[in-house]
Length: 81
Image (tube, rainbow, N blue to C red):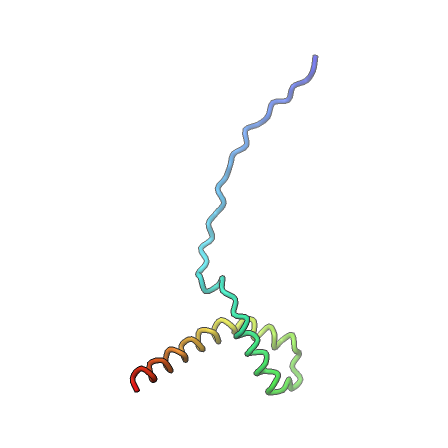
């Protein structure tokens, strides 16, 4: 007599939705490059290049937001002139 195995019912679970702000999804590679460029122009002064890259990677979002703000200020100056 053949042995028949019964299949167990598998519960399907829904994947959790992770709430991420849209800012965390954006990559600011231009701001990162500008940061790295400006830091190396100043001179490394005994700082490892990996430390500069780490700093620029984590601050690129802030730099991009500041650049957008500066553009808005310039647009307002031109519009008011």
